[in-house]
Length: 502
Image (cartoon, rainbow, N blue to C red; front, side):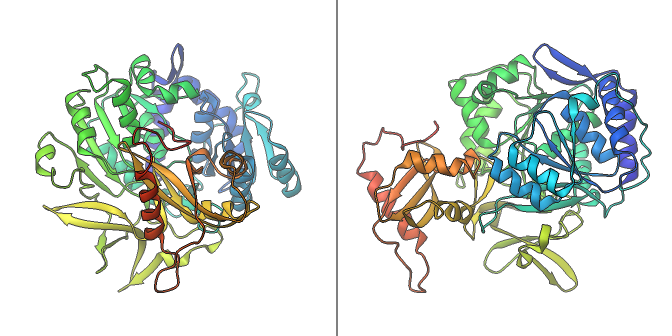
């Protein structure tokens, strides 16, 4: 593991190339190295300290990420745009020793830091030219079993679950990506997603290892108009979810559009063949890859290099396959069709020992239950959805019971059942609610936004008089979905669901 970081630091230390670009703002690896050394002056003497980085995607934030990991400490990304209470839950669970921030902390988080003794440091002050600097030792905290970062997933209890990932867990994926994808020196990697979305591990580490620049999206309008960001920053490597490609197709009006994208890395959602057709034949991307993986299993575990032939070969499926396991990822499929993954990329477990049932030892091998249904077809694997109440929506893994638990905290809602429904080729989140009084959807959304990120806010509320139960006495989720579909079929077909983001 130490050799991996020696290579990473050597590139940052010696490259004269661009490390960051956002429109006219550019920064070099030399500038990054200087900022990292200054941040390291605060980190020196600490090993495996937990460091929350509560900051936006500015250049100092990237410098901080590399400084934390290279110093043998633990990076914990926290997005300031998420609700304060949600962030407080994650910070509380991670028990940080240090919080690096580019802005004043919200009151509750600042109070938590004060009460627990977590040190708070201002990134802008740390990276100023007048700040002291300290060289990296690269000799502690970088073993394969040492934790590199902690990310959080949605939890069924209504609180996020922390996933500690060691250097030995995630580095095999980066090495596989570096070997499989046809990178060139001086690429421009789009950084479209939240740092706490594990796709970020791909570009955060592959970019410097290829002496390439990161081009982050910083503004809401850039997120809404990704094609403009791609063209303006001359992006050559795009790692994202199929929903982003759907938006790009809409913005391009499904017409041929010239971009600099050579490598497209999609994951997180089923990759429809019509979107693959657009990427290959309208965007002209030469190398399109469909990946599959989970936060708990080291980012990505399967891959498939897409080709024009897929459009015919998999027409019956209507989706690209997730392909075959990456090297070092043993898999097995249960008789019920659930995918299980073993190997060095599997986390040792969740923070606070939560959800131990997701792990099972069989014949001396430790396996992770993904909860995903898979089938093999034509020598490759397809992912066919979830067994449990967890879903993937727009690339985010969401535990529906997390939303339901927060809905039940709203006065007047006795029970809530969430599910995903399609509309005009897209998917949106629906909450069926049993309530004694009239429900104000906008008030419910406002209350939920105090606890949940936007991607977990239902776009449609469906009031029902009684929650149907199945023969086992459990909530009959398929029946509720059918009730909603029947109701929707009576509406004007051209009308978007209330609150839908289209």
